[in-house]
Each structure stands twice: as structure tokens, then as C-alpha cells.
Amino acid sequence: MNTISERYAKKLEAEADIENLAEVLNFINAELPSHSLKLRNSINLAVEEIFVNIANYAYKPDKGGIAIYISTEQKVSIKFEDKGREYNPIERDDPDLDGPLTEREIGGLGVFLVKKLMDNIEYMRVENKNILVITKNI
Image (cartoon, rainbow, N blue to C red):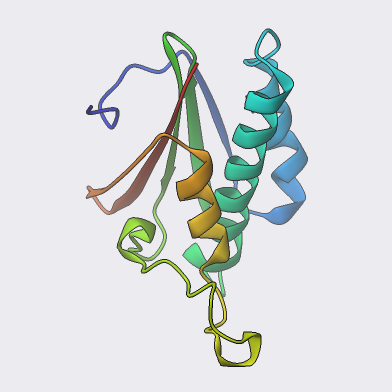
């Protein structure tokens, strides 16, 4: 399943800043009105997690842009593109959820959550851009 090069119906460009989270979620939800509440909630949570991570870490300490694309034909596919630091979240090990809290590493729960909520996640670094695609079957 190669969704990296898939055609997307809608596109949003914004600054990768937490203040733009509501705009991002409104953009996503405008394309999901006929889908179930459970599906929309899962997608919203995954989008929020990814957007916040990009906003907090991709360009730090500077700011930069993000493009978000969505397609809802046969499945929901959302592509995030940024020109921030190279980072492949798929390569991150899942956190240890069984060990004592005091011995667990900080971070990684958001990426783990996105992996659990979505049916497919793909990452590529192309032309100095991070491209992350999340897909949820309808």
C-alpha cells in the first residue's frame, strides 16, 4: 500500500504552531462529516499528536510551515509534509508499558498511540521534506 504518492483531494498549508491546531482539526473534520464518531475521534487524536510533535520539534527553536493533505476515497489518508529536521517516528521503539513508571523513558507514547489508532503509517524523506502518511480504513 503506497499512500505516499496518492492523490489528495484537499490541502491545508499553515505554520507548524500549536496555535494552529484548531484550524488543522477543523480542516480534517470538514472532510469527515459522514463518518462515525469513533472513526473521527481516532483520526483527530492521531492528527493532533502528529501536528503537535511537528510544531514542538521539527523546527525548534525556529518556526516553519506544514502542508496537510487529506483523501477520503475508500479510506481516510492524511499526509503531513514539513521541511524540519529529519525524523522517522516509525523507527522509534514502542515504549515499555510494563515496567515501573519511575524507570520508563520519557516520550514516545504519542507515536505509539498513533500506531495503535491508525491502520497504516508510512514515512519518507524526499527533497528535504519529512512526509508522514497515516491511513485509516473506513
